[in-house]
Image 1 (cartoon, one colour):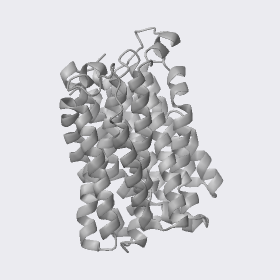
Image 2: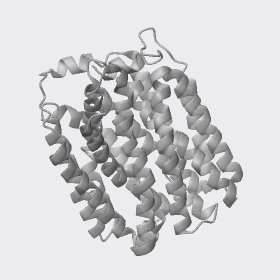
Image 3: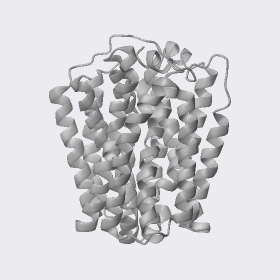
Image 4: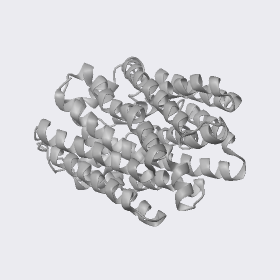
Length: 391
C-alpha cells in the first residue's frame, strides 16, 4: 500500500474522532449543560443529519477541485470546529460548532476511499479501502475512549481539544506527505447522474439506512448503557470502549477479505451476527464479566458495517464512484440520525436496556432487504466489488 493511503487513513481517524468522540461523553455533557441524555444525543444525530442532507451537493460542488486541497480544507475546518466546541458555553453554540464541519465530512470520505482504490491494482482495491476504513476503527480504539478518559480526568471540553489536536496532526501530515491530486477527468453533472441509474444501487442505499440505524440505535448510547445497566464508572467505560475499538480493527480487516470473496454472503452473516450480539447484550447487560466479552465481540462485528456499506454502494455505480460514495455517506448518516433518535425515544419511554431490541428489529429488516435483487446487480458477485472501486 502506498504511503499516501495511510496518510488519508490518518485523516479519516481525525474526522471520525470528532464525529463519534461524543458517544463516550454524552452523559457528562448532559449533566454539565443540564439537558437530557436524549437531547445530548443530537450532538451525534444532528451531525449525522447534516451529512445526510448536504453530502451529494457538497461532493458535486467540489468535484473539480484538487483532491489534496479538498481533503486539507476539510481537516482544517474540523480543527476549528473542535476549538469552538471546547469554548462553547451552551448547547446551542456546541450544536452549531458541530454542524459546520459536517457539511464537508462526506467529501473527505468519498475522495479518500475512491483515491485509495485507484492507487492500487484492481485486485487490491478492497484492501486499500479497508485501510481508509481502518482509520475509523482506530478512532474507536484510540480517539473515542481517549475522549472519554480525558473527560473523566479534566472535563468534556478537553476531549474536544484532543480531537482538534488529532485533526491538526492529520492536516499537517497530509500537506507534507500526500502529493497533489488534480482532477484530470472533466465529467459533466449529467454523466455523473447517469451513473446512478442502477436500481440495485438504490436498494443498497436503502439497506445502508436501515443497517446504520440498527447499528447506532444501540451503539450511540453504549456509554449510557454501561453506566446505567452494567453499573460501570468512567474509567471502566473508557476501557470497554478501548476493547470495542481494538476488536473493531481486526473485524474491519477480516471484513475486507471476506467482501472481496463474496459481498452478499458477508453482508448477511454480518447482520445476523450483530443482531445476536444485541440479544446477548439485552440478556447479560447487567453482568460485568459477561459484558466484557460481549463488548469485544460487538466491536469485532460492528466496524465491518461501514466497509460493507461503502463497497456495496460503489460497486453498483462504477461510472460515478465518488458521487456514489458521497450518497453512501449521506444515506449512512441518515441511518445514524434515525437510529440515534429512535434510540433516544426508546430510552425516554421504555428504558436504556430496550435499545438493543430496537437494534435487532432494524437489523432484521435490513436482512430481509438483502434478498431484494435485480438482474443488473453487481455487488452480489464474488469479484465485482474490486474492479468497480478501481474504475
